[in-house]
Each structure stands twice: as C-alpha cells, then as structure tokens.
Length: 425
Ligand SMILES: Cc1cc2nc3c(=O)[nH]c(=O)nc-3n(C[C@H](O)[C@H](O)[C@H](O)COP(=O)(O)OP(=O)(O)OC[C@H]3O[C@@H](n4cnc5c(N)ncnc54)[C@H](O)[C@@H]3O)c2cc1C
Image (cartoon, rainbow, N blue to C red):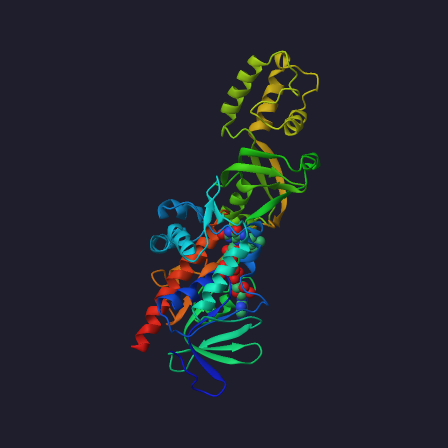
C-alpha cells in the first residue's frame, strides 16, 4: 500500500485522471482484483460520471447485444482492430455479468441496444459509485490535474493539481475522455506519444438547398440508404428529416465512418438518399413499373409506392415535376425517369453539421500502436496507462462507446493490480 513519503506529497498505487466510465471501471477493477491498493480518482467537474448521467437520453445505453468480438469490432470506425484482443478478454457478456453481479439487470431492445431495466442512467451511476465506495476507492471532485510527469528515478508519476497540491502514484491511468482541449493528449505527448487530432464523429447534416424538405421535419424512413458520392461511405437504416436537415442512425453512422473525410470538406459535400432502400436505380425503376401496372387508375400523388410516408411521397412527386392530376397510366417516360431518380438518388447539398444532442463522440486521441492492448500500458512510458475515449477509438451509436470504455478500463485495472501487486510482494 502507498505511503506518504514527502511533506505535501501523498503516494498512491493508482491515480486515475478522469471520473468517467473508463476511469471508474479501471479504478474499481484494480481495487476489486487487488484489495488494499490505494486508489484515487481525480475529477475536475463537480460531479463524477457526467456523461453516463446524460447518456442514451438519460437511460444509458450501457452496451450492445453483440457477443462475437469479430462482429463487434465492425462497429468501430476507428480502433476496432486493436480492440479485438481486449474484447475477447472483456466483452459485452462480461459487462452484462458484471453489472448483474453488482445488482443491475440489463435489458435488450429490438435493435440490440442494452439499457438498465430501470431505464435510468442513475442506476448505472449509483452502481459504479457504490462499488467504488465499498472497494475503498477515493474520489475527489473539483480536482483538475494540471500536469503529470515521471519522477526523477522513473518509479513514480508526480501529479500536480491546479490548486497546487502534489500527489505521487506508482501507476497513472489517463481516462480524461475526448482529447479536444483535455489534458490527456498533453500528458501523452509529453510522454512521447503521438496523438491523432480531434474530429467530431456522430453528427447530423445541415441541408440548406431544399427548404421544402425541411417542412417534412419528423418524417423517418426506416430502410433508406445514404451515401456520399466519390467515397465508399454508404449506410442503410433509418433516415430522419429534421427542421434543419437529415439525421437518424444511417446519417449518424455515415458521419462516424466519414468523420475524417467529411472534416476535410469543411462539412460541405453532397449526400445521396435512396428512399426506397433498394440500392440501385434499376431496382427502383423495376419496382415503379410493377406499381404502375397495379395502380393505373390512381393518381401518382395519391398512391405512394415503396411504403413511403404520404407527405414525403408528395414532396418527391413534386420534385420530379409531376402534376397533381397525373395518373399512373399516363405517366410519361421522362416523368417515370425523373420519379425513379428522385426516389432512388435524391441529391442534397450538405452545408454544415450539428452535433446530435443524444450522442456525441470525438474521434482522435492517443495513437494505438504505442499502447500495449494486453495491458493498456504505454509502450513508451512505464506505469502510464490509457482507457476510454482518450484513445483513438470510437464507435457508432448503440452502446459501443461505453463498451470500449468498460473494456479498456477493465484491462488497465487488471494490469495495474498486477503491476502494483509486484511491488507489495
Ligand atoms: C450526450 C451524450 C450521450 C451519450 N450516450 C451514449 C450511450 O448511450 N452509449 C454509449 O455507448 N456512449 C454514449 N456516449 C458516448 C460516451 O459517453 C463516451 O464514449 C464515454 O463517456 C467515454 O468515457 P470516458 O470515461 O473515456 O470519458 P468521459 O466520460 O468523457 O470522462 C472523462 C472525465 O475526465 C474528466 N477530466 C478531463 N480532464 C481532466 C483533468 N485535467 N483533471 C481531472 N479530470 C479531468 C472529465 O471531466 C470527465 O468527467 C454519449 C456521449 C454524449 C456526449
């Protein structure tokens, strides 16, 4: 166990910078695996676990019911390959079991997202805080770390808080979240690490060239396909029209996979929507022909095809410049083609991005090849560990970001417990 060995300086086995999901899980793990370790979490905010509280619309999407690591890593635009080993060590099954063994039952929604059965993120916060307390983890809020440097003999990390206090620790876990403006990137760089610059991920698209589309705010198409011409970016799933553009899981996923490319365009690019979800103009053309045969006497505007919502259908028919009284039977060839094009490939100019209120993640962070994913320890600076969003790992929506935080926090905590244990022997 650590001791106070200098005036004004307190020695810990583990100091965690950042009281978020990854920091708490790392601290709790170290304390559970090696009882008696002196573990401290430093959090600059007045409250710990701030993002857990607001996550998932206040429900906390803890993880995803995808239990095969090979499949799971496909949900991480950055970092998936590095996570494969760690996910075999600590995956969603382990997360579910851990929460259950600590009194929190999770439920799975139809799309695979997992939430506490209470539907309240407070349940997760209470569980983590209660466990930390029981395991003797010390938590200090309103404690912002100013710097962290290795001691002269390289056996300790010296932490300075902005109030001037000094602390010492054998192991340091940096779990400061997204690197934008945070201290995590600076500590990593000072230790010789490369850090990928920050870029927003998971954002919605602002569309200004189609004001009438925005009148359809609230309409969702469950199986649309969104793509960005000139790139491989293509996602199928719900697309939601909002009062300022396009949102919904397909758009958010597109933004996550394209985070770097779209940042380079300064968020000015074209997006193409296939409202039918069929995936090719040929298939839309064929589907429309069959529909025409079956509904010859009806007006085009009054008989939406492909199960599209009638308000959206009307907008598409008007955009294809088809008159309100046109019947399916006398649709001209040009009109058929225009309709096919609008249905299968409506082109919109994106002129900006918004962050999605419900889920926002930063991509970028500590470069992964310089971290040993068997332990989450720096390959450059002994005793320095990383977990959570400070790493260059980010997932799409659905609980994957928290899973990465639990996994990397857990592995770091286990390794730190071993590491600290060696000194005690
Ligand atoms: C609105 C919102 C909703 C989300 N919902 C979900 C969801 O439902 N499911 C999901 O999987 N993901 C969700 N995410 C993403 C998820 O919250 C993050 O991926 C996750 O919180 C990352 O955990 P972390 O511990 O690495 O970082 P954080 O949770 O960001 O924690 C880092 C902590 O470090 C502290 N800190 C930073 N610098 C210092 C310093 N110098 N000194 C002391 N403390 C410091 C910060 O104050 C912070 O508390 C959501 C994100 C947002 C913004």
